[in-house]
Amino acid sequence: KQEVTQIPAALSVPEGENLVLNCSFTDSAIYNLQWFRQDPGKGLTSLLLIQSSQREQTSGRLNASLDKSSGRSTLYIAASQPGDSATYLCAVDPYNQGGKLIFGQGTELSVKP
Amino acid sequence: NAGVTQTPKFQVLKTGQSMTLQCAQDMNHEYMSWYRQDPGMGLRLIHYSVGAGITDQGEVPNGYNVSRSTTEDFPLRLLSAAPSQTSVYFCATRTVNTEAFFGQGTRLTVV
Image (cartoon, rainbow over all chains, first blue to last red; front, side, top):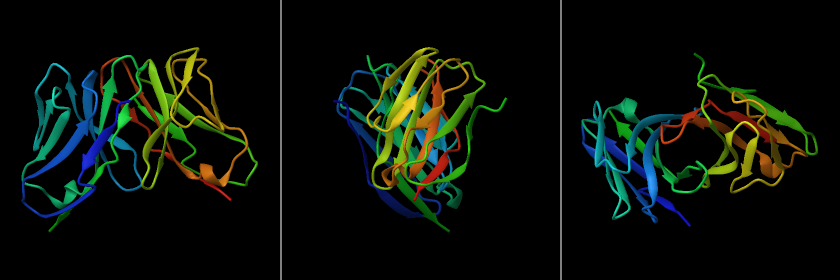
């Protein structure tokens, strides 16, 4: 059974720091991995999607990597800002699961001014 | 282009009442899903659909019913509301091997 884990559950950093969020999954048979952001009381917003054949994807200050063989993905945020404060979730799209996404529990990020 | 629209945004029900949470999308996506989000439990899949006329159960389907008569709509029915169904409900859509789009959620309280 595919399981997705995100560590740490919460992270607090001063503004300007570079930081890394971690996501691990137990079964490497996936089509892709997606990172989301969720602000309090809001829905999830897609940040980056990495196909299983890719190693990384970049969007602005965000860079996501994928190592399928080891079951790991990281989300790197450069020069963090208070506006980056949110919960970040990763989700995998497993083979032969009818399109079901499996989510991690999320990392709650707080960037202090 | 509205994306994914969920209605209502907030709802209070009495135990035993029934209701339908609406989800509509205008992106012509084949896949639609319902999740519930509870503190400490993360997102849990209730029901999902890979196309009109096709639905299947997710991780926590009991007490919920779905149907998918059109590509655009995927309503979630609570048959007899219970306090354990107090949660935030999200609808998500996507097409094969692409990013998922979420609605803004329905916050449901059952008293």
